[in-house]
Image 1 (cartoon, one colour):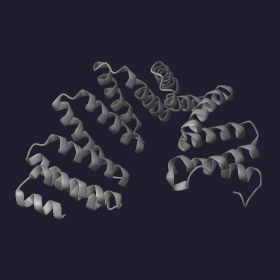
Image 2 (tube, helix red, strand yellow):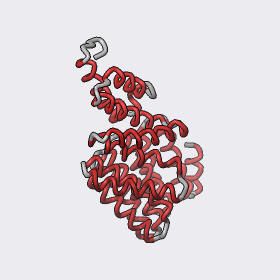
Image 3 (cartoon, one colour):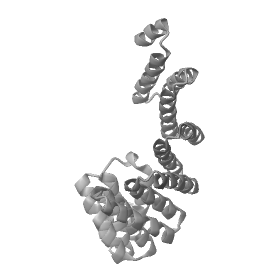
Image 4 (spheres, one colour):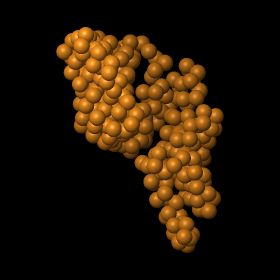
Length: 276
């Protein structure tokens, strides 16, 4: 605040804008979302006044992220789209593609999968246009994941296999855990247990190596579901417990709640009321 006061006296609006956004960042770390947004918006207003596009975009991206975390879907989309529009006007296709990818994750977070796929397709076109093939693996994987949520398994497999091929081509071995899990998940849903186990185990091994507890949890969840479908219900419960022990429940609620529901159903079938 003292630094801001000094810059206001000198009339240095660029520094004023930057300091206001730094104040917003402090509030963000303190989880004071409303106050953070207010400071970012003040900094953005000054940036617009002096036509400092870099700072305006920085504020928009931060505001979009805060609204996403705070659950305000429309405002998050609005801010992110404005940032995309600026990059489009500037002709910066690489950064436009980056923001489109980020926008797709917001849509996915709020389960707007058709919009996520449409946004990813736009990013895909740009990445192909600017000839950045090493970035295609992530886009293919994200499209495939959204198609899984839409129930379009055959189309999802096409994109996921493209992702695997791209990651192997550019030696991004660690990133293979994402499409490999998603392919295994499709086979698990379809009841093709041998194929599911093959892909899920590969993903799980990479996730352990990368210390990625989220993918480990997803893999163990699907392994447990396969075990349950095959009648190995006590083993499935043990696998579910292993998955749930990886992190505090609140960290991945959307993923862990279905897992808890599956564990509950098996517990009731095994006549274990205390466990249920």
